Amino acid sequence: MTGEGIFQLFAYLLPAVVTGAIAFYFFRLHTNNEEGRRRFLLHKDSQKNTLPIRLQAYERMALFLERISIPSLVVRVAPKSADKNAYENLLIKTIETEFDHNLSQQIYMTDECWNIIKAAKSATIQMIRKAGMSETDSADKLREDILTQTMDKASPSATALSFVKKEIGDLW
Image (tube, rainbow, N blue to C red; front, side):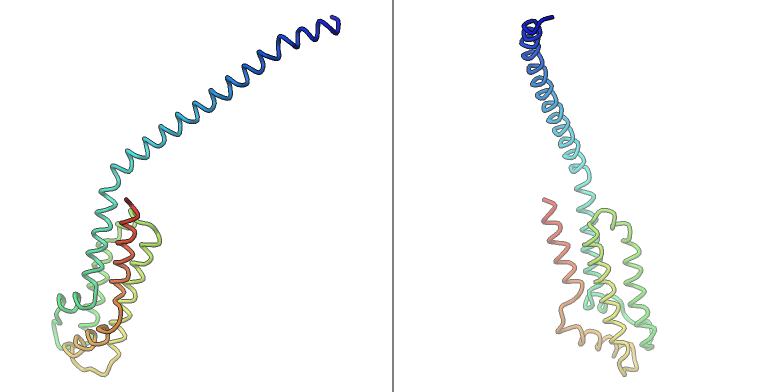
């Protein structure tokens, strides 16, 4: 083969190679686009099925936070005896029981939200323990002290509840 024959062969092959490369590029682009579309539709269907469950979990945690707020808790859980230590333990046990009952909801919410809810629970227990260190001698007086000490402060439950509401707003 001469130089001219090689040049002619190259002249015939170049358009075929370029056309093949362009066809491959567009085919690849199309398959990636279709894969992305399928993934989006799958995610959309998944969201449609999981959104009600997630909203229910947030709803349950909002109820939990309302139930452990100091005014609600103290009004709902009355002392069974005059012993202030027994009443303090009863309040803490009530919070822990409520929390344990809703423990499975953590799989439906973000780690940040779950950690804020746990922090609110712990802060509420600390407030009760701090009030329990007072010089009061009866459960009824402890009840009054708990309400008095928490009256002026922002409730940990209210702070956590506002975060839960914000996170629910982000779901839409």
